Length: 242
Ligand code: 5HY
Image (cartoon, rainbow, N blue to C red; front, top):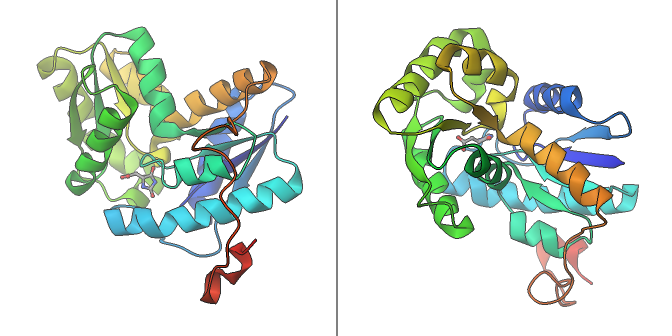
């Protein structure tokens, strides 16, 4: 299968890191194609970044449709543009936050999230409520690490381990969810340091996408995920017109 792994931020180096983590768990028949929008924020750390990045995600879905993608992963913990992206394709579209919550809820009755900046905590809390996992998440914690600093994982590991250990010792949980795609390559080391199951959304999403593809499960075209109604888009979005 051809899996398009979309990094919604415009940092190609992070796309490469994420794609390497994805390829390590991919099945032999799965081709991982890392995709980086040409336009958009270098990292996503605010509601504004998230809103702008959603357009780039949709652009990458359009490109994927032309290339014959069998599934898509939106590799940013805010799942930017997830619902809009699903309207544009019959293929599965999986956000890493939703994927991580699904798997974490199957290995523990309670989990906490360790994410980047304090200001993005509310974005994860909104997703927990939207996806129906708020009751199972004890707390969304911030290690106060800017997203792009995660490109030097060794320099961030201490702060991530400290926050994850606080979660383990204070939150009454059984698992940790990593709240940034940029942490994907740190999962094993963090798990060993904390002694709890650590769920990374990138690898969770890749395996869920493979399962859905194998089951012949794609995005429904009945109801609100149906193809958007044809209309004219003005200005620089003119190419969206249909
Ligand atoms: C991510 N931002 O996974 C999120 C993490 C966050 O650029 N990639 C980003 O803090 O929301």
